[in-house]
Length: 423
Length: 188
Ligand code: SF4
Ligand code: SF4
Image (cartoon, rainbow over all chains, first blue to last red; front, side, top):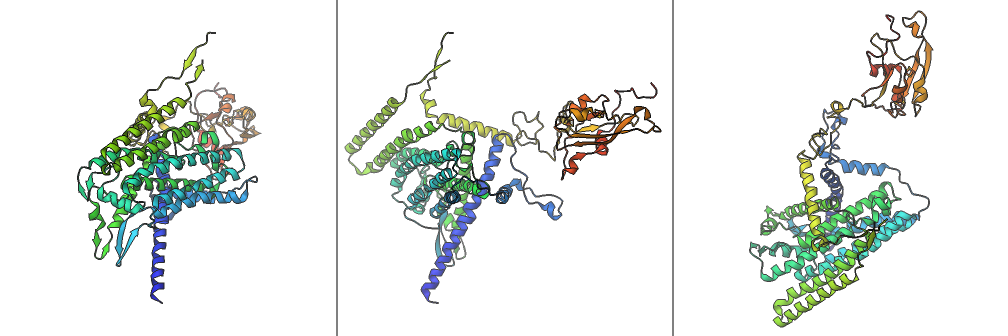
């Protein structure tokens, strides 16, 4: 075999291994795991027990006791149940789209996995490989572009189900996702300005060296206080973090923004007419989106796979013989952070009550949209300040203050007056 | 009637920003989580919790000791202290039973029997436990105080046939009930 063909084959094998490892062995198992955490954590919050029985049924094989594993096997049992249930397609649906919709919600979420950096590079058998499936130079943009395709799945599900509840759910979801996409895109601009890079792996590497965006307490791998500019930049970074996180909540249809499927009003929202595995696909898509969303937040704001505090260099270079495998430890760190963030998602769900639809729209368009815009301005000013004459900086600051005041004033004036209620 | 005009209460800036309330909420739920993990949830003691939340975990923990006196479990037939079956198959319970769970085939007591004076007893007495709603009407209507709702609540079966309690089973669960009616007692 000629040299080139062998090299191509090896490359292909590596890509496939990465896809299988990261998508199907890391992200997909995280879905049932987060379902399990969702159920257990919510139960504990509500003074209940939650699923704690399903484990390895040793008694089936003649052993004395079952091995209950704290119920960790529950999601598998649930999945099996969904798989074996009758897959009912109502008569009144538009079949082709009805079948297509669940797929369209899962696939985009899984595609976005490919730009998430799980760790730095590792060296195995003399080859250095990055622990990311596709090392794209437009990481965040790719994620936004692909993940907004999810809305097609939900809209199609709502429309093709051809009944009122799914339809309302689908329409709500469309409006909600489009509105929050804007906040999502605008809120990361300061972050991208700061790093001057769109490659997620480089962004994380930068954070590993010079401090996480929200915790910049080391430079060049040594603990130190941040410079004045970095300190000032924490303000826009924090605003961006809040807007981005809330928008991710809205994008993934999680509480408190789960209006497309709120059970109290819309039965099940866009998946009312779905059953069995098709329903499970929606479920999976939603949780996969949540996993990816958390991964993105961690990558952009909380240092991705880096352990922080100047340990990263040492961990990344940890090697056994010729194999530099410290990267895998970083994968572990990344997954730990991811789990913590997923737990945060769950805590929010069981704490914050659902927003009303007009409140949701107002939050998106009137508050976050403007706040994100001003935030971009502020971040640009802080980044550009050292290179500009101080008069220009001052003028910029004054302009910023005026614009902010004007926006707040407009928002105040346009607010409808308090209604008089009659007793 | 005088009209009272109400306005929505004015929120101050802190309340409008909403994040304070969110953080308060997180504290509240986390407090619940911590308390529930330590088995110190509100009401855990009174509900005999398993140490996780307020829940009693069933097969290991039973609520038998916590059952109230008036608990209505499975309906059963009882015999009196002399071993006589109290039921005289008057079929009142069969007629009152709202979901028609009871089926009785009456029979005569032969004249050479010890209890010939009673005249009737059930030949067959079936209660379909898939139908019974544990209302206790049968117990209330029975003139002989022969049918009682006992505290058995674990009525399970793997087939419909298994869920039908026949006469033997009913007496087995019901057991002996002393006191109360004595009108068939020979000594009187
Ligand atoms: S159980 Fe009571 S009510 Fe029912 S047939 Fe027997 S005596 Fe009559
Ligand atoms: S408890 Fe009620 S439902 Fe059950 S057998 Fe008696 S009368 Fe019928």
